[in-house]
Length: 528
Image 1 (cartoon, rainbow, N blue to C red):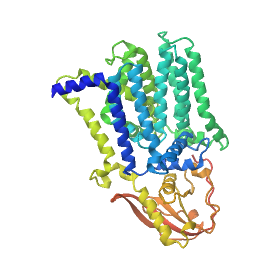
Image 2: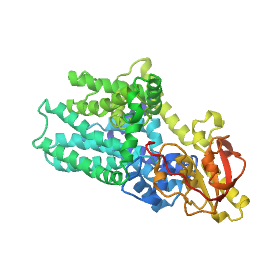
Image 3: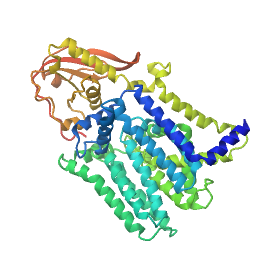
Image 4: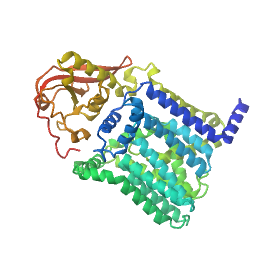
């Protein structure tokens, strides 16, 4: 056995690029199979973004335009299917892996670290989710990682540096179209450059080119977003301010200790606990390397330590501290894990190479657990897990709901073709749009909730005299009086528990509505 391990280790060292290709190809094929096998319905945001593709615009209420155009490309190739919606997420995850390996192997001359980074990324829950779910985090993380390595390359190589500044500008623009968080990257670039400048390690004309690249990337990235917002009372920016706790009454509320442990726990969870520990060891090691050469034990050059330190700590600490002020979603700090994956790989590689005694055998446990987790996540429907113990169960049952709505249309209405579908939440509305056969657009009624993209599109004002099916998420939900008044007659509530491959999934409250006469309520102002 030791001889086999030695031969395997030597083969890894001789052909790391081959093994990197194997990891990328195998994990990509697993993701394609997972999506094509229908194990997980579209999560609500995915269906929402898909609905945007039927109204391609310069920007949208809560996000930039990129996600809609990527999904439009995927559905152009594979049709309006789950694979079509998620195909660009799968491609994006492969691209992220390729960039990470190329940066570590070619730019840093550390191909084995690159292999470990691929293993760690693919066994982190955050990356597993981003690899199949078509959300804005996927193109944002790709843009961020490309930006980090382009920034590094531009600071090292005076020859061909223009090429890397162009790549940096494109990464900033591309990432901003995906998510506003990318506009923070120029600040990261300045912090990195200032740190490297202290040792006079920057090429000539570096600062001028950096400013032009960052400014150009931000302007190109924000231009369509600003143009759309200018025509819609700046609602997108106001929405972001409110969500971030710097708009409205939330600005006055500080030190909410209840949110802090929840947010910190979410970070441990999405990174997978053992990789989270190695990430923190690596991040602290990078800081120590800036203080004293060789103090990190990871073989980092000073320039690399600066890149990883500013690429991780500022964003990660900001959201950790800000969670004392407002609720922070687990994925908001995702960009910090572009550098975080590299830090975890460096710390893990050090542990792997220096472990002795009992730890030398124990070191196999963590990657094996990661691979097991990868298998379990991508084969969840084959596990005999009751729905109440399956965390993914709350994401399932949408396709069954769509089939049930279609059955009600056909059996309970005289003219099924004159029945529209609506809900009061954007996620339910989007899922109904995608999963009800025919994929006709559903509507989202606003009775006092927060604004969403559906409020900027016309309601069913031209459907007077039609019937409708009203769906509310959760069992036992009542109908608001203002919704009931829009119809001549409304049925009793139908409580429906959806199914997914024979297992219980989500519950819904359904109302059959007859004789729509309006008026469709106008969205309230100032609710973001």
